[in-house]
Length: 117
Image 1 (spheres, rainbow, N blue to C red):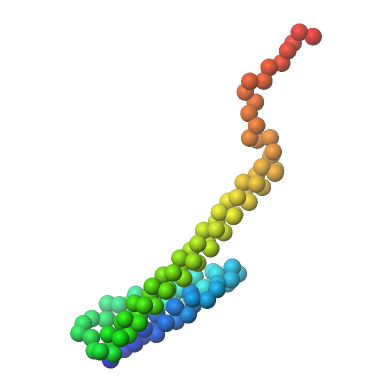
Image 2 (image 1 turned 60 degrees about the horizontal axis):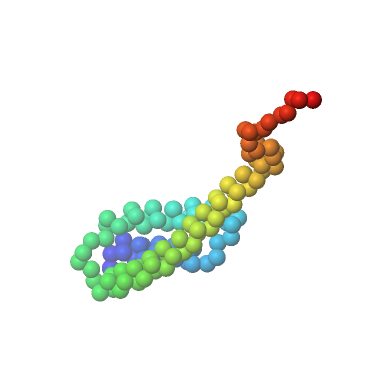
């Protein structure tokens, strides 16, 4: 069996283990950096994987495809967590601006003062 297929399968399993568990918010930056490193390493191996494939390489390929589906689901979960944090930060930023200047959003058009006195 070619070494590129074996190494790609190892990286895929490592990537699966990384995204399959819960990712704490404080560890998310480290996990995302590690995911990027693994995807880059795996991407460099892909051009080296060419047919014809042995039976064992076909088995590893099927296993990698199965794991890739689960990896994609884990990446979507991480992406959703990041998107939620971005929404929360934007909401906090808006509330902080309203707190520092509560009269900014009030309209002053249409005020009429009666000067008859």
